[in-house]
Every structure is written in C-alpha cells, then in structure tokens.
Amino acid sequence: MPQTTHIDKSKLNNLLDSKTLLTVRTTSVTVDTTQYIYIGRADPGSDEANPVWLIQRTAINSDESTATLYANGKIAFNQAWTDRATLNYS
Image 1: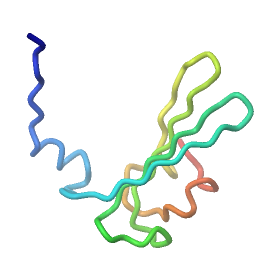
Image 2 (image 1 turned 180 degrees about the vertical axis):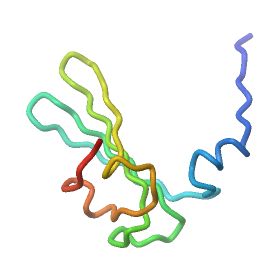
Image 3 (image 1 turned 90 degrees about the vertical axis):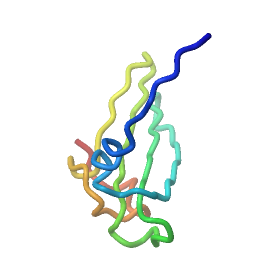
Image 4 (image 1 turned 60 degrees about the horizontal axis):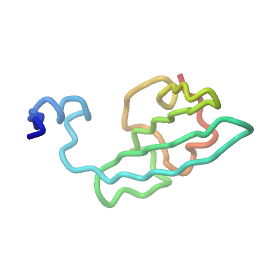
C-alpha cells in the first residue's frame, strides 16, 4: 500500500504569503530549445492586469535541466500577470 504524505496546511499558508485561497494561471512558451512555464497566483477574482500576482517561471532546457525563478527575484504578490513575459526573473 502506498504511503501518503500529510501536508500541514498552516505551513502552506505561510509559504504563500498567508494567502489561503488562490487563483492560479499557467501558460507555457518555447523559445529556441528552452520551454518556459509561467505560474501566477493571486486572490480569487484578481484582474490579470493588476499588480497583485506572485509569478514564477520555470525554464526547462533541452538537456532537461530546470531552473525556477521569481519575477524581479522576489516571492511577492506585486506583479501583473499580463506582464509575465517582459519581467526580469532571478
């Protein structure tokens, strides 16, 4: 029988800046040989153009190595989802 892992929800809330219910947007784009996956999180009902999103970008390279970075190098709910492709990630 497979083992299940219990997730402590109180710790999850802290990891997500105390946001308990989040809207999630995901999109993927390939540039040359690298696939970029963007994931955005915000409060439910948030406008995609408002700077209230936490945005991360994962790069999957042709050698299958990955790197996950955050918009402007910060884990913060302060970016617009519509700007995801033009933001700096570190």
